[in-house]
Image (cartoon, rainbow, N blue to C red; front, side, top):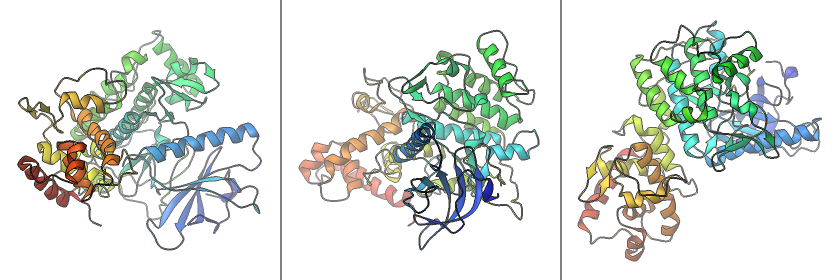
Length: 500
């Protein structure tokens, strides 16, 4: 891409933080992306630098861009998941000699091979062969984002990145917002084809327009339809015509007429995402869609592979208008190509069920300031507690599910708004595993000064209490059942810990 066409022009060789700028990769209305090489030692060697400009913009434009940058940075600081694009560094340029770049926010991000949007462009109007697996992974990442209390706000193929190892990432959080009660508040924006009609009717107040997480579910339906068939779900040559068709459907004036290339049961999947009102759509949250998409992707057979073009260029397509070359290789969690994105958390060649990878990573990354609370510990604890049995039922001990929760204890570690009454078993993994993360994060500060292994102290406290561990000055040695449990835990920690 020619640098002269970029919104933010950065000289080749310019050093930003620990990165040296190379070729321009992509540019949109408000930001530009460049390939960069790390200066000095360290991994990864390459990254994509996203420059959010200042320069000659008006105060109102600067305020809007600052808000988008703040939103993106906030998501990356508070939410971590293998399905979300990873930020390597956040830099604010301090260069008074260059007023165009001085004060610019730069995000150093994982370098992607391309975006789903560009893959669709190359598909000449058809769907993508591995669309089922892409949809499944997007739903997994979105489920994690939603459980953490966020709305993405701009989910579309242009913000789905395809990585060199065949995995995918959900990216671009400039319109993301944290839930406040039942709503989040976003500035006007978004791509009209992927925005539910009710969002346009919301009044814009001083803190933005109200939006619910079901707006992301609508976007999943639109994106899934496009990825599977190459066509959007609502007819029309222009975006305005398609928006009118969507409005007619939502108001009951027209039926939902999905493309012929969309077979069952994907047709039902998309239709559920595109339910005409929030109340109906909320029955199909991202976690349930993730489970359905995983089943449908598994039924579609092994992933089809594409050879990278000889002169293909790996880029981070963070902007809907960016042109990139895509090497589309995909696999579900557990397949060698996809497993690599979990290798930093635990060994994927161990007996940890791939269906629980995302939930284990979510639970183990809830409080990154507490290093002992990690996915490998959560995995080892689940193995020790139940052998990964989601249907475990032990009424004599009043313990149920994959994490052996006692209902009266689990109550306090459910998401906010679900703690008003004691839950009734069975407890699905989607409930049990994230609650383990919340409990560990609550206990960790209380055990910081206790000698011994922080991991083992946490696991022992989970089996007993923080008071028991504190009073014993570490893992108690006078409890035979706990001693047997801790022996199993140590074995699983050794088996699951990733290689250095």
